[in-house]
Image 1 (spheres, rainbow, N blue to C red):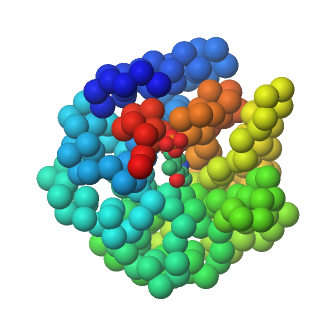
Image 2 (cartoon, rainbow, N blue to C red):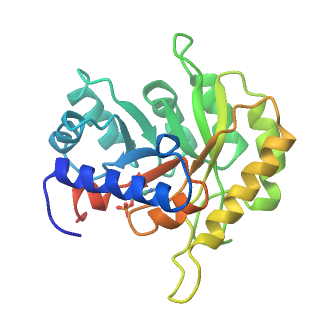
Image 3 (cartoon, helix red, strand yellow):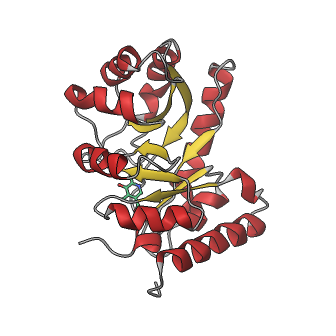
Amino acid sequence: MRKGSIAENLNSVAARIVAACRAFDRDPDAVTLLAVSKTKPAADLRAAYCAGQRHFGENYLQEALEKQSALADLDIVWHFIGPLQSNKSRDVAEHFHWMHTVDRLKIARRLSEQRPAGLPPLNICLQVNIDDEERKSGVAPAELPALAAKVAELPNLRLRGLMAIPAVRGPGADQRDPFLQMAALLKELKAQLPEQPLDTLSMGMSGDMEAAIASGATIVRIGTDIFGARK
Ligand SMILES: *Cc1c(COP(=O)(O)O)cnc(C)c1O
């Protein structure tokens, strides 16, 4: 990646999204850019905001809460995309608009119970362990229908869709395979739960954004290509 300012980087990522949408017959308005700002200072988020960015993703709660207070004057849409211990769920329920990494009912129940009454329901993506990797979080595809049915019943959550972090394929393999599996899972979920607003596939990062867009991603989560490498 060429090293530019955050505004320049945002422009080039936006251009890549438009180009990928054009190449794969997608509407660019159907793909939301989520700027992943973990480990980056609040000033970097402010710079991105001034360049027009509104959706930000954070992985670590304490760090996220500090940036949220520093940026309280901005109308940012906050997405939590990191692993969450259940004893920390209240902070997500109270301070975020979206939560992408729900993979068990216990967390979902707590988020629904702890969502403050004055706020709209918390938008939820269920994280799927699409490559069945031992070290990765996420519900197994076979267990997804049962989990989704239970989450859909929780009053203060809106079940929006699915999220995944697939393994990186080697050369010669098609990086689209896991993303297409995700799209198929979302389609099955829509048939299972027709009442739910299931419109979201949160997938694609700096290295595999185009493959994700080709396969139907509606939120791409981009860190490095906007803010530069992390330490
Ligand atoms: C860090 C992170 C990203 C962004 O990754 P980049 O390769 O820096 O674009 C996306 N999604 C999740 C869940 C992350 O933790």
